Each structure stands twice: as C-alpha cells, then as structure tokens.
Length: 452
Image (cartoon, rainbow, N blue to C red; front, top):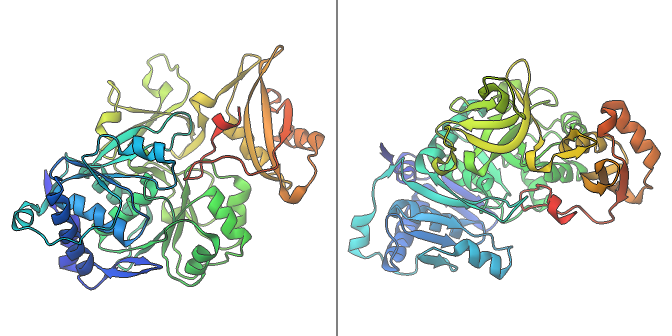
C-alpha cells in the first residue's frame, strides 16, 4: 500500500506553517520541502536511490531534517548517527551505508533525472530508517523500521494524546534514537511543528516550556528531574510531558504533579517504533501509576498468557503494525526482554529486564522495583541495583547509591525503608556509595554493565 509523501503533503496543505523551530532559525514547510528536494538531488548525484542506505552524521536541527526528508523523498533509507559516539562507534553504525552525510546538503543543483526520481508516495512496506538500539545490555543493534511502522505509531500516539492543529512538540532527545526521530517524522505526518534543540540543556528547555513554546515535550526521568530542580512550574501551553526511556520513580511523578506538570508515562522500544503503551491524555490528572494501555493499534500480552499451562516469567510481548517486521519471533510476537504486570484495567507496569533479574537464595528479584523504592527516599538521588557474587545467597542484592547533596549514606535507615515496601529477599544485603552520577545511555537508561 502507498500513501502520499508526508512532507510533500504537509507543504501543499500548510506551506507557510512552521515545520521546524530551532535556536538557529525556523523553517516553514514550503522551505523544508524545497530544501529537501534540493538535497535529494545531491544525494542522487552521489549514488543514492530507492533502498540505498544513507548515514546522516549531522547535529540535530534544520540540516539533519533536510537530509532526513531528502532520503524519504528519494526512497533511500536514512541511518542516523549519534555524533557523541567515538569515531570507532560512529564508523560501526555507518558501516554498510553507501552514502555518508557529514556536511549540510543542498549545495548542488538538482539534476533533471533526480527530479523525476522523486516519488510522490511512500510504500508502507518499504524500510524508511535504520535506528540502532541504545545498547543498555549489549552492543547497539540495527532495527529496520518501515513507513508503515512510523505511520501507525503516529496515528496511535495521536489517539492517546490527542492532536492539536497547532501542536508544537519539543524534542531535546537525540535524533539518532527512536524517541527523538519520531518527533520529526510525526510532525511531518501531522503537518505540525517540531521544536528541535540540538541537545538537552536544562535552561533552554526550561525557558521554552515556561515561555509557552511547546504543547508537548518528550523527556526521560533524569531530564524531568533536572527541570523540576530548576524551577519548572505550571508551563502555560504544555498539554503533556511524555516521559519514558526507563523506570520513572513514583516520588518524581508526585513532584511533577505538585508542580503542575502534566506527565504521561510511556513504555516503548526501538523495535516498536517508540511508544507501545501510553497514559492517555484523558487520564492525566494526577501522578500516573502505570505506563498506560497499549496504543490502539498495538497488541500486548505477558508470557504466561500465551502458555496453555499458564507458565511464564511475565515477559512483555508486543504485536501489531508498529512492530519492526524483522523483530518478530516465529510466534508472531516481539519478545521485548522486559518484564511487566497488567492491572485490572489492562494498564502496564514495567518491573524490569529479564537479563537483569537477580536470583538470590532461589528467589527472583527485579532490580527496577528495588530502585524505585530506594529513589523514593529523600536522601537518595539515584540508585542502581545489581547482583554481587555471594557464597551464601549465590547472588546478593546490592544497591549503589548516589546521595543528595553529599548526605551521609544511612545504611540502616535505607534497609528499614526497603523492608517496609519489599519482601525480605528483595531488600539489599549490601549498600555501596557512588560519588558521581550513574552511567546512562543518551536516552537516560541505566548502563548496569558499567557498574559490574
């Protein structure tokens, strides 16, 4: 099935509407479309065409967006490259791309042959982009997402969060990750505005939110916490702060609610083209306690539900048109590697990663559950829970704590705090102090492997 090319459609519908708002300037849809056509000509002259992989190693902003949309107009496959990686890491991600874009495009005139090659439609079954996973437990893996994946994700997100004709979605996430790139792509599908910052910096994002520049913003727990620490209060135009990328402590959600910041929790991953579940806008009224129901186009199950004997470990399984075709197992489901629970209304609570599960004295412990309890303590800024080899327990539940403002580490008090909320076998047997922030990915996920 084919649909009208998203950027061409947006430029025809709303030529003067702002497509991109950036600290370096704003571009209308007419300007972005013209610039993307020009850039597509340059890419075609360099050998790009339908199915060709084009690595884009440019900062977030108008030059990146121009190159991205040039690829889509040509039918080439865009491969975003995170500039903050080392040279060797960037080379590995760009490996296999026929064209590498490291400088802004559009300096060359468009050959007539290239103009003819610009298709007016997108094939929903064709690969549009290759995104690399964040690599929390292993090296980043390439995931091929189709035009259909992206379109259904945009539709599902709009159903959950609503869609304002004058939406302004603030993106300070890396465009090399699915959460950031989705904002650029959805905005083109909606013909709305993407407010793009090159990177997350607390003060510029705070000014944008308090100044009414954004109606939506995508955050992770770390960036939400930094904004609240900096004084974020009742942003006047903000309909929703979509927050995910990993566990979000309940205490942080309570802080956001008290500050008048409407938070929608979301769960997703690269293979699900960003959001898989999202707290609907209509249910945002307090501090959300779950990551919400699945998007209307997504099916969700837990591993026991697919076993005739009712046996399973609670792994989250996903299916539907947002799931990358290459990520589906032989049973037709994406096995996420994440563990979860469903409440009585079918809302998802993510409890951790299968690979992170600690087996202590024969009992399974989900580190994320223990971390959430620890981070609710007023003296704890960050917590990481992992296994340490132990002759008695096999694996001892161990907590690494970053304390607030050089506070002492009250081990007995923290142990009591955990005991009030957790089963005895889940209470950490060891506590270690970290004097530096815990290692995280660009999208805010904890890098446990660097703490082993």
